[in-house]
Image (tube, rainbow, N blue to C red; front, side, top):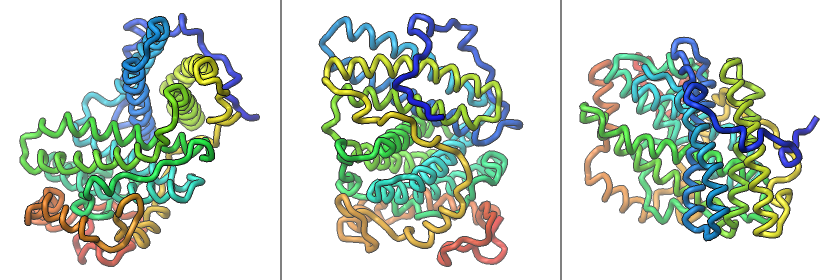
Length: 404
């Protein structure tokens, strides 16, 4: 049976406000939690944060005071949802533990989206980005072992491999080459719009997280690595946000935000093994159905359009967290040398790329390389999790005795 959010009714708005006791959810147990349950919580925090930020930007352009008040109420409810979701994260987890979980999200979320993206140009954007997040996971896993003497295997549970991707030092590109061509809102499949908003929200959350936690470390190499990768996450936000059609109206975007929340809460509810967390996804889904109804009414009234024109009449198949090892290994053999030029992709390092690399690195090795040198010096090799044989690209295979 199909599920059409546009015909469903959720919890009435005046019944959605929760008190402190209801917001005080017990956090996940890091020793017992399914890694993908934590991934789902991280994704939904990013989605809620994007929705709140979008709402605040909309408020600054809205002149109707009564409408501003209505949207402010919904935004407050969204903020309560964000607190519940983000407060699920284990309070005893270190910043680096959470960082590795963030990168597992980036890898397996983006890889799944790429595998299921109907538009070839958008798929290329996700394929390109995921190999960089894959390498970030590898760098942070090695930093984790150096700083905390612990292994990332406990966090990712071997669901996601830890090995080199496109080298992080090669991710620094001239800003002009991070801007992609936007999709066409009139012809693009609704699923493509949801994919773009989802990956954008997740990357934006990662950028914000690294901007805030990076300076908290005392170890110079940790501070420097967060600084380097945070700059790259900013590039990723540009990369993905430029895919959105700038001709979309405020009310189209409001509908897309609310519809995407419905889509993701419904997706995660259908696959969540933890009954307590599943109940949260179901509750928030029923709240978001009402938020979506309000957004659709506003688009009809202020844009004179029907929501089916931009989101279709039924939800796409659920977005799913699952291992993507085979897909990523295939990308490692075919896409690792790719960089960007303008809104396209090339395999050869062009002059603008080379010049920018010289400027940003200043003739020295960046933190992402120095961190690996330090790990090899201290432990005699790299930290990796290879579950399906050695690295598929010969250039990145660890020398004998170095795979850990």
